[in-house]
Image 1 (cartoon, rainbow, N blue to C red):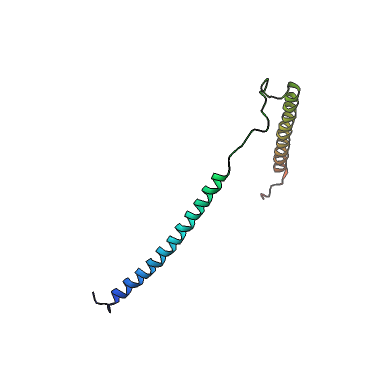
Image 2: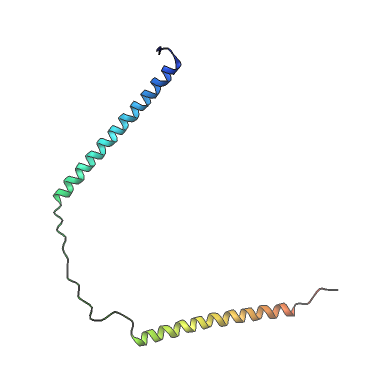
Amino acid sequence: MPTTSSTYAVLQGQVAQLSGQVADLTTRVADVVDQQESLRAAAAIYPGTARVLSQAEQPKAPSTFSVPVTVALGAILGLAVAGCVIGFQVARSSSASRETTTPSTTG
């Protein structure tokens, strides 16, 4: 292939571009290898002597709420649900009564 052809020039441009990319990737690989070596050195220095500060005690019984607390929570939640239901019914009945008392405009 003659060196003056346009195809040769295009290929040379691609080779130059790829050479730049190879150089960039080589630099990145070297940086990653350096970082890996640094991390390995840091891991070798750290002895890893983790220890438990104080032993946990075995529970004597499952943890649960006492009966009075459970009854009180049930009563409070029951009252809250009942209040919501009553409020919904009042709003619904007042809405229905307003619809029946509006004058009709048929003539």
